[in-house]
Amino acid sequence: MRTVYLNGSFIPENEAKISIFDRGFLMSDGVYEVTSVIERKLIDFEGHFHRLERSLFELDMKNPLTKEVLLSIHKSLINKNGVNNGLIYLQITRGSAGDRDFVFPDPETTPQTVVLFSQNKENLLDSPSAISGIKIISIEDQRWGRRDIKTTQLLYPSIGKMMAKKVNADDAWMVQDGYVTEGTSNNAYIIKNGKIITRAKSNDILHGITRAAVLRFAEEAQMEIEERNFSISEARDAEEAFITSASSFVTPVVSIDGQNIANGSPGPMTQRLREIYLDESIKTAI
Image (cartoon, rainbow, N blue to C red; front, side, top):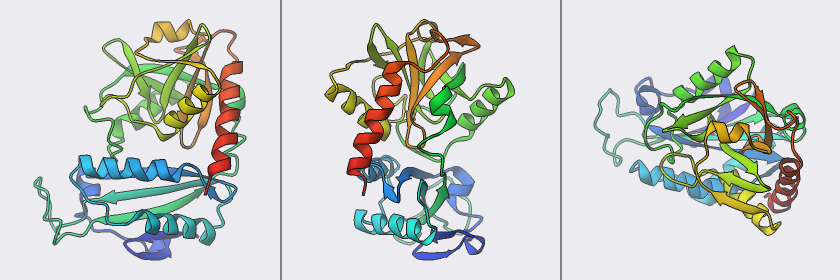
């Protein structure tokens, strides 16, 4: 049985309880982060912490814990649960004022709810998807307008994943005004004429921590990058396509809406980017 962290205490998962009036439960009034663990070390913890602070600020919430305390909690969960390869999930909500109300409760009298737990994923590095690539479908992007904030409002992304599953695909890319925004839980890319193309940062997409690292490493490797919109049609005609996220790193996309990309196999640039990302990230893991 896992040990989890809840509001200052490490407890068995079956003893963890929150109020039915918690705003995270009633209104998705909370933010989250997921940090990968490789060989018992955290990947890009600094980046995840800074995005957490930004998300909280955008929702007019304070961070109830310092970076040092959060790092200590992450490390403790790795040790207590024997996580070699896996994930640490962190969620902070506005808490419970003891009733339901659309108006924010007074933060001076309503403590926030802080939850962290671990997930073991021993095949994180050698995921079958990284070897064979994934198949995706395109769907209309029907999420709210502040996707740059990493909130717990994940119903539509879940619906998108189920839409993909129903047609034997692995995931979905969401489309707004004719252009791809991102995947249901990842950033989206194509490679065309040897150039990496991905949507520029805005309120329309999550500012991925893995995205930032991959683009930085790609630039250092003298790869050309263009941050602009691209359509599903352009993606189908691309040389390669891939996604990035904290849990999938760099994963090839080999099919869109039933049409193969190039020869339907992971491409060399995507495979090289995954190698570079993992090599460099492991070097700086803490």
